[in-house]
Length: 164
Image (tube, rainbow, N blue to C red; front, side, top):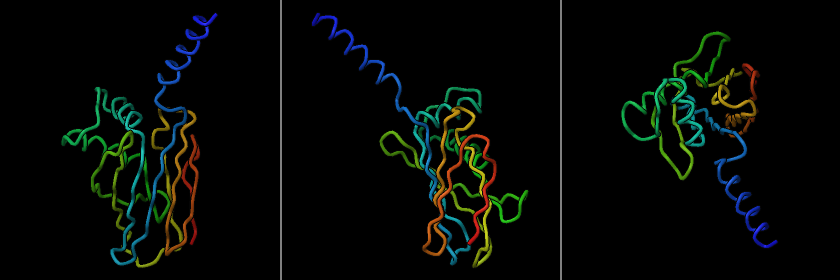
């Protein structure tokens, strides 16, 4: 009896650790900087999810590191998956600042020039990792002049407009 219990317990632990995490989410923090007239963007994603997305998109096994090719993949993936617009259909160009790894997550940093001292609204499309996971949730926290506007993006949500 004890042997059966230990076997069941062992199986449960192995199956628990087989999945790195049970939820699929990213967090994006955006801060409008009126001095530089830009959006300062920080995106937090699980490393294994990012590697899977890059591997799928670029059709080669990608392991996250600081190598120039991997950073180029991250830049291309993020600037296509996370889009900011002042006018619908006219994406603002994003400048890739860099990445850093922290435990099991990667932070990706972008700067998006808006060339305006004030904004009346902002359109955001966030499809990060949604090609991999049907339950992917992307949270965008937008800090505009000290007030934070949060939006949840799920599969097939499209673009959201935030008015200030």
